[in-house]
Length: 178
Image 1 (cartoon, rainbow, N blue to C red):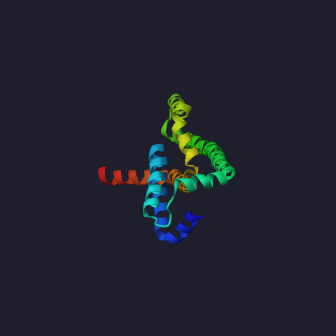
Image 2 (cartoon, rainbow, N blue to C red; image 1 turned 60 degrees about the vertical axis):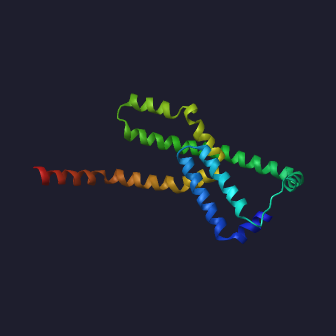
């Protein structure tokens, strides 16, 4: 309850820290660095603790709280883990379909496309991504909901405009070199 009070008492500073920390976590997930995402969370917690005069965590108080609310903690952790596992499956679905679309445009040779598919969908290769998606699922979900529709829109627009783009390029060539 003290933390909740601090969130509202600290006002803009808490939320700015949360936003900066979230941007760092999303960036870490994008570059597939679970260590960087963990360090972002850890540094956010340390900054919160250092600059909050309202919260003075004590080890004995934390242990006492955990003893009183152990079932609630287990339910929260289990729920977070379950949602993370489910989200990683959904995200893998999006990832593989986006990858298939990308490979269709990048490779014209079926053998090259198949080889690239096998490499990029190998579970050993995907392990780090899957773990990041599971562990940091709230940020992964948020970024997927924002980023994927934007990418799809611009990919769609590019594919529809490709004829126009080629006409502009050909027109410039004809007017300058023929």
